[in-house]
Length: 409
Image 1 (tube, one colour):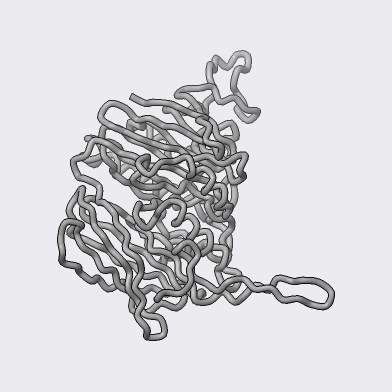
Image 2: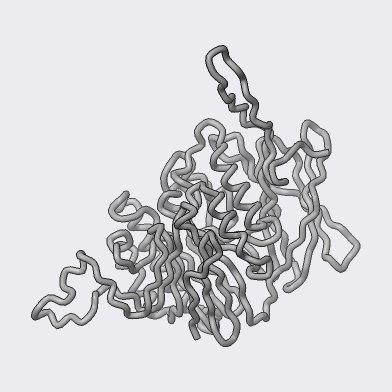
């Protein structure tokens, strides 16, 4: 028997109410004996990571089997206490898997030395030779998971194989004694995105660089090259991900504008070197399409937010054959066509007599799509698909209206 759970993902005591002689007052119970997950991370044709976070679970393991086989194999999870919190991250890295194959799994663990057996889930590894890709992107949820739930009502299960969180899904994450808001947001995102069966890729936003827990966000994810125990500015949240005909480059812009510029500049410069090495790989060059994504878009009408990132990355990306860029940050969805004139009052030389300048110097050299914001009015979801002929992007709002429908061939 498992304890009562919220949506099968988040386990804690229910709220209770106490009544005084003057007024009814809600009493928030202690935030203890909670679990979040399982949720999938770091997928490939031959590997998958199962994550599970709890303040009380013991001896966690994942029991896994190929959907077409009878034998079940138990894999012990690695426990990593998150420093300064009551939480422990449990991870199982499954390797030697077969591409394009369905697997079933469930978690088993102990609570007060009593066994708990979780429900069964399934996932399918990406095929190594597929020429299709389907994913969705959410951004700037800012803990308002009701907005995420509203847009996901208009996304079909077959529309996506994995999710990309494009930053600021948490707002200035601070533990605040018990981590209630951080873990509730994580649990709700896992639930509405079906993260137990479809992997979630995480791109850090500028607000997730703030707050006590910001230096510990890396413990919640499994990203290639990320060591959450490293010092704050040595944690690498940038990574690439090949998916069918697409090669994604995910960069971490860090803070916006001038905030902690001296601290983030070496990190941004390090990412320039990383991009340079990534785009030289034969596998990158062989990919049909190349998509660049960062929380803060490199080009926009308010270009000041990314001018330092743009200064480092744009010269390298000019050699990367980028077909499409994706961004967030503004809480206002927007589409910038390739070489569009992104006029704003900070383009000092644009259209001035005698300059000979025909377009804003901050025009994107590739099409750029920017997602919406946290409110029900602003919220969006991007549905991104690719095959051997084209990349198509459809953006929906919380009412299910199609705001953007575009293709890259």
